[in-house]
Amino acid sequence: MRTLRGHHLLCVHGFQGMGYSESFVEKMTEIVAFMRNDYIDGPIRVIAALDEACYTCPHHGVDRCEADEQSNAHVLAMDRRVLKHLQLEENRVYMKSELIERTKQAVEPSDLDVLCAGCSWLSYGVCKEGIRELKNFSDKKD
Image (cartoon, rainbow, N blue to C red; front, side, top):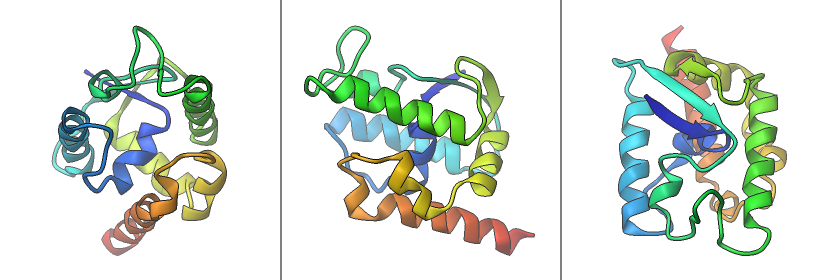
């Protein structure tokens, strides 16, 4: 079963191969391939803590982000904002399809300005574009 932290539920839609290290990029690429594959579904435990992507990041400690003194509090705050926005319970297991659908229905590209406030990747615009594409793809399928 996959484990993803709250804010990574949004990152997967905008991920374009950038990251903190080669191993992080490889892991995120694997996660993104799973999340974007419409032909497979599966359980995902959502958390506000280090997840499988974090453990490949050079900034992870034993149980927290150690990029700088404020980084752990910052990423936890993003996780909790996303979980609240998507009305998800921390540590609960959801099917991937449900998480994708909740994101399609509840998240607008402009929401990332609040949900992901302070994220260094937000300025690249790929996350907002990913959410926009997710919503547009959904409209075309219906």
